Amino acid sequence: MHEYSIVQALLNQCEEHAAKHGAGKILKVVTKIGVLSGVEPDLLQTAFDTFKEGTVCDGAEFIMNIQPLVVYCHDCKTKSTLQELAMACPKCGSLATNVVDGEEMYLMSLEME
Image (cartoon, rainbow, N blue to C red; front, side, top):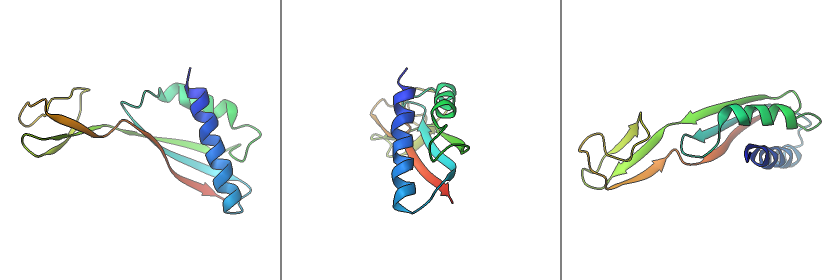
């Protein structure tokens, strides 16, 4: 389960940001998780709740914003947000698409005190 290593890296980032800004505690952690990131949100939440204890994130709220798949079609030159995990352009049906968003996981913001 790679969610545990992801949470460990996330907590390390939180610790670094808190130290850099002189914060003693993080109240809220906001992330963006793409549907193609390979991250299972329920497992990530469980891992965060487990490993945050005793860290600067102890007691922090964990917000996950799920990012849908966004593709760019090279044939019709449009960017589309897809409701299904398919690579075909919903406008013209072309498979000449590239993923623009929805593959990554990002730490978006922290609320600190």
